[in-house]
Length: 89
Image (cartoon, rainbow, N blue to C red):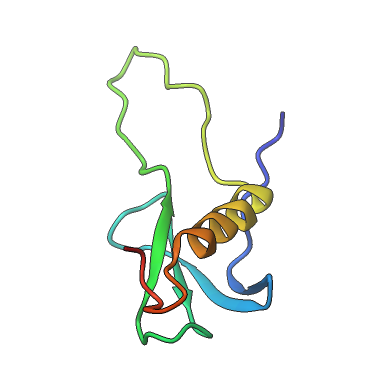
């Protein structure tokens, strides 16, 4: 199966807007900022950090984030947010 990485930029999922960008402090992960949410600077990170593999050792099977996986992660995040506080409780 070919891994199709998510594109960078805004997603609107179930009426809520998220800005998605690579997390420079943790390569291989993405920050998903909930720009339409009730709390400024709130969101989540997702992905698989990049790891070094010693010479002569086989790399792990490719794991990563697909566009479909990103959309599902946003839906899961929204489903766990308390509608009264706007935070995950």
